[in-house]
Every structure is written in structure tokens, then in C-alpha cells.
Image 1 (cartoon, rainbow over the protein chains, first blue to last red):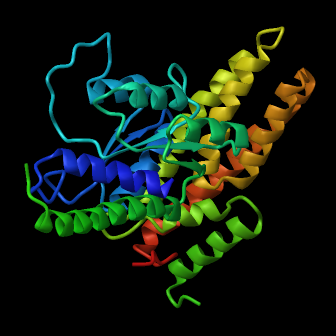
Image 2: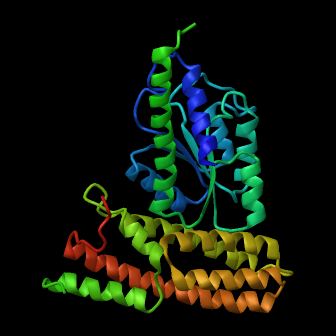
Image 3: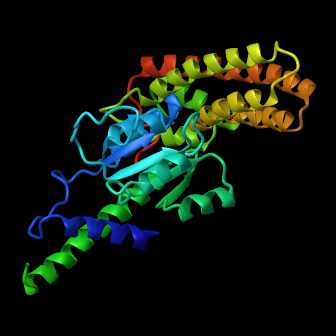
Length: 177
Length: 150
């Protein structure tokens, strides 16, 4: 899982100008948090802010897709906005489940590289496996703890930084085309 | 032991909430998210919980007035209620929610009804205790109940 995340980050960074040392304008990771529960949204938002992330919290998969600009029914309003670096979504939601959201993100050429983490109160192996098979980066069992969020943000930002250092080393030797 | 009487009272109330099983470790997790920039975080979350719970309890009550019971719907409501109860560390309420869902899964209407009455009692008790706790907390001023590791 961590390896996939590292590769994902590396690939994204390489697609952008080789000299560019940061894929996003700021150091902060921008997380899109999706949960229909008011209480859980408040908690996850706080957990992410404490881990120094920028957070956008929405209450449904539909709104998450709208935010990304993927919703078919509403026209993308050309909102470029903040790039999303990570999606954390609840599994059980009315309307679109977290699993369905995961699939939609992974099916999209524009957004499939964004790591998606699933949260669920139910610790069901079959569910976890299904999400990981569909491309989820990780799976958190609720209630969410600070250590869960720290773990995820840590290995993502570490992989990115390590990836950057590796890339810089390679670019020094390699000719850019 | 706190020398300040209000803080001492707060400590005692807090300990009792845990010792008597009303709250679990998740409440401590919330306390660790509280700091000078967010000094009332726990109370804010709990206040949202009351709002959410009131809605869900009403929904369940209305659903229990319609026979035959729609167990699927009842379970869905309780799943939400269990989730938010779990998120604030409401241990006894969470346990009753779990039981209610068991009754839903086995289609036991009587069980659901009985369990729901018990759940409402537990919820009311917890709410009363937490309201008293936060009232003292506000009077006592900022207090280090749990230290967030830096």
C-alpha cells in the first residue's frame, strides 16, 4: 500500500515540469474529507488540521465529485481551485457509498492518481479487501484516532519528499528533453 | 490532585464518567484535539452529537409507530446513531445501539422496542452528566485534562 502511494506521488511529480520541486503550490497536503455524519466531519476536519493539512469537508460522494469537477449532472464551473492531494471517505453513506466514490475517482483519468482512504465502523475483511482491490490506499476503522490520520499523512508526505530527493538526484545527471 | 476546588471537582466528575462506563477512550482522543486555538472543541463536538441524536431518536420513534416494523430502516437509523455515539466515546449508548441492531437483524420487534427505551434512558443520563461536566469545565477555565503529544 505504502509502495503504491510512493509510486503515485512520484509519477505525478514527474508529469509536471522537471525543475518544479513541488507538485503543489504549498507544502500543505489538501485533503477532501467525505462523511455524511456531522459529528464525524467535525472530528476528521480537526484531526486533519492538527496534522497540518488543508481540509475541505463535504457530506456526500456527490458533493465530493462536484468539488473535483467530476459530477456529470452539474457542469464543471471551471473551478481550478486547490488541487486535492488525498481523499478520505466514509464507506457507509446514503446515495453514493464511499466504495462507489472510490470507483468513480479511480475510473477518472484526471483524478485516479489521488490516493483514496476509506473509513468504516465495520471491520469486515471482505469489505476492506474489496476497497483495496479497487485501489484504495488504506482503510481506517472508526472511530478515527489521531494516530490513524498521522500514519497516513506521514507516509504520504515522507514518500513524496523521498521521491523528490531521488528525482532531484536523477535530474542532475539526466538530460532533460 | 488539583488544588483549585473547581478543577478538582472537574477531575472527579471526569474520572467518574470513565469509571462508571459512560465514556471510553475515544472521548480522550477528542480531549487531545483541544488546545488554546480550539479550547471548546470537545463541547462543540458533543453539542453536535446532541443535535444529531435528537433527530435520529425522533426518526426511530416515528418508525417504531408504524407496524409492521421496517427493520431495514430502523437499522439504518441506528447505524448512524451508533456511529456518532462511538465517535464521541459514548460507551453505554453505543452498547445499546449495538444491541438494538442485533434485534433488527433478527427481526425482533419486542426486543427493539425494549432496547430503545433503555437506550433513551442511557442517552438522557449521559447528556445530563455531560452538561453538568461542561458547565463546571467552563467555570473552571482551561485545564490540562489530557496532553496532546507534540
